[in-house]
Every structure is written in structure tokens, then in C-alpha cells.
Image 1: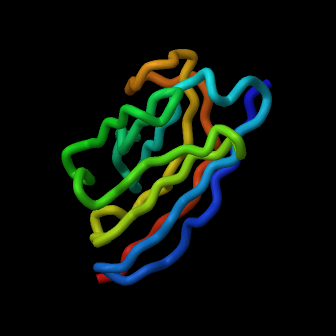
Image 2: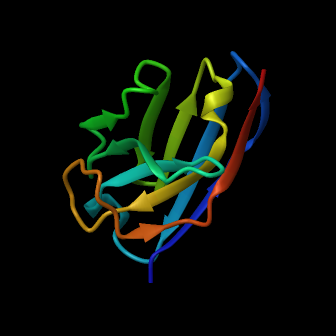
Length: 121
């Protein structure tokens, strides 16, 4: 059974940085793509970033490209999201996700419980 646990959320001022982490367990981590999504109040969940099984290929939503960086450590079975130059519109619950695919994708099958990120203006 896949288990994903996010950490690192919190309150930060606009222009600041946060680093989210996700610890994965339950199956061979290095075989699957990982991603981050977010959901703001009253809005649908949206894609943020993705990384393929090896970490060599990444994909970003246009709204975060150049500000956010996704990375993974297959030895530690973790995926991280470094968020810089944060804006109030980045405020949301952030979810870690694991795909059944190896290649970078925006389609995911397993989800964490989420961590709140709040950016004050």
C-alpha cells in the first residue's frame, strides 16, 4: 500500500521561500514518477510540478516555472518542492502524488494528505 506524507508547509511572507518534502513508502519508489499538486479554497486541484522516475526530466505549471523546483532522492524515497519568490496566489493545500507511470506525467494514482502553505501579502 502506497503511503505519502508531506511536510514543510507553513506561513511565509510574499517573496519568501518554503521547502516541501514528501516521504513515500509501500513500493519501489525509484520506479515511479512523482508530482505536486495544490488546491486553493473554492478552486479545483491543479498541477504544480512533476518529475520522472530518475529525476532527469521535470515538468512545471506555467504559474510556477522559474520559481519552484522539484527534486527527488531515490535512496531516501523522498520528493521535494523548493518554492521561491512566493506570492499570495500560491496559498493552497499542497499534495504529493505518485503515478503508476515511470515517465514524467500529470496523471497520478496515489495521494498524500496535504500540507497547508499560506503566503501573506
